[in-house]
Length: 306
Image 1 (tube, one colour):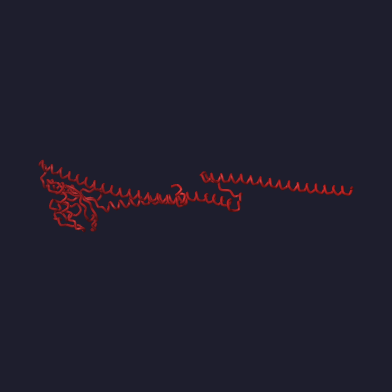
Image 2 (cartoon, rainbow, N blue to C red):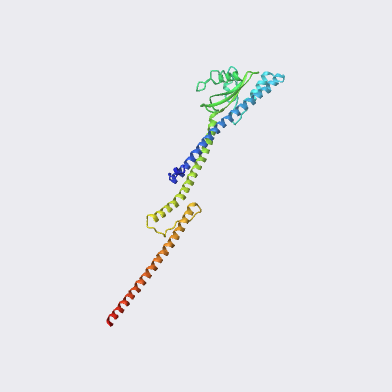
């Protein structure tokens, strides 16, 4: 594995590392966003169920007053209805009441629906939502129903999830819901925030990676050039590698410079010794020449005497 990696250029290897890190980061962010969206939905579902169950408690309270004779049924229903009608939560969420025939008893936002039979009312997908409310309550007394419904102040239907629960003593069904585009908007805000943070982290990683690659490749290139100059170039021993830093490459540069210094001193001594030998050789040649001249002169004198 190590030998295989050594076939990959250092800059490509480090860049690949950053790319893998970036992909992993985006996968983690995507997973976090997915979990976050589901968490938001679960929270909204739980909140809607809780407020509906709480509102049903209001019915139970006034029904008890009816049962004890403190209120008539009409008054108990009227007080309960008025309390529910004026109740808001999460700033704009509201309640409605319909009976088991899908006739609206009270709608907090659109009072024009009060008293109307909405058993055949369909959303844009063809779902008869009020009939579905009744069917869910008859089947299990409570549950969630998804459909399309306009937000307050708008005519365009959007996705909505409602929780409905029956109150059998009065034959009422109370419901409330959450618009999913609110969840989507909140999710998009989180997605944008996390995407910006992730992008900044990736860009910083790329910048740091570039600086690290440059800090590695630049001294490696200098070392490579210096060794090439010695092995195949002019062999200029005056060149030295920069020694700024404390990493392994700096240590290599220090060792290289130390080696070149010793080599230079050795070569300088060799050159100096060679020069001394050459001077001594010339001196010997001079002495030998003089000796030969003296010898020849003596030989000539000896010849003349004989």
